[in-house]
Length: 511
Image 1 (cartoon, rainbow, N blue to C red):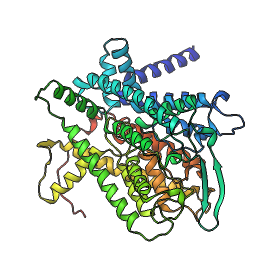
Image 2 (cartoon, rainbow, N blue to C red):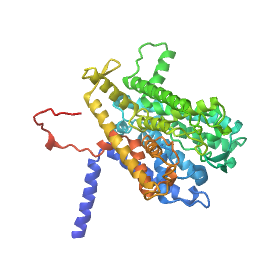
Image 3 (cartoon, rainbow, N blue to C red):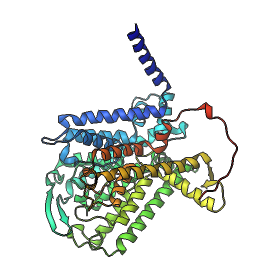
């Protein structure tokens, strides 16, 4: 009897837990289950190439990076995973970028033509950070359909480009003192003239680019074999922007085009679209201007602009490289610069890190604090300086709750970045790791941590040298960046009726 009573109590506790579980907790648990399933698939021998010896923590890191649409890797994707393993990664990227519950709603509503339950709608609202539940189903339906159409179109275009364009897959590794020390040959992965290989590359990179994932199956240096091929870079930039602006913006733009075609004038962009697009553009332009200032005016003979290595091409190629990387910091993770040849200045890396920390729009594939959060904080500070106690944008007042939440998100995000950076310092050879303390600076570590938090994927090469504790830290950082600070905090929140009272207010001196 005692044993049966104990079993009954366990079942009652499980039942109580599932009955009281919140929508955010459902999302969190579902995400964890997907990561575990993805890890199980990549553990299979069919996923790994013969002779590959990869640890469980590296597999978990890869799955977390793919599902969070980050792109940071501890192993070279094309050399580690078979076609099946690469397909698993592509699927994780897709469901992580669009959203599990968004995909579920799209499949039920578009393919099977059935309505969704109120519970599913509420969960979707939390997953996509939407406040307009009434338009949510229509937004998902139209936006996800548009994304899939864009993937198909981009796949066809990239298929042609990969097939006809000849990339440089013989990559050099250069030492500042000794010159060329070895050649890395990735010509076996060159899709030029190969119908099947170019098609596979087109499908994988279309999914990876539109979801701002940063994974590639070309080499160990991302898109660097196509450093001088502008057509590929332009296609990628278009996909990165579409994936980074968010579902509400995509929906608004498509509705605007529809109204223009029908010659109707009763359309107005939502406040979210206005703030998101303006802040996205301003962050990009600010980053681009600062990058040009730092890179074009310095006298360092080894940096991108002044380096005499012929692999870096013309001045036009170098400017395009800078432009592409500024776009890539908006959560993309692709690079056209082989860091074994040269890299950007530390000052430029800090600018890139800050841009990755900011991220792109909510309800998108982006991580970071999000552009709308930054916009509210900047306007709030500026208005406070001018003696205005309200935050007003585009003739609308932003609620005090939104303003307060924005500052909370910023504070917690800075704390996470600093803590994660300190933990990653343990990977240096001066502590408990193998990463060279002579080659890696604070800017390199800060850069990779911001990349993880912003789910971007750009790296200075640090991730391959991380110890287990640092890898677990970045996995958690990527997960928080994917789910969002607000959702990460709210998932643990409980209603505490004991605190429904207030004390007498008193001012204190602050900084």
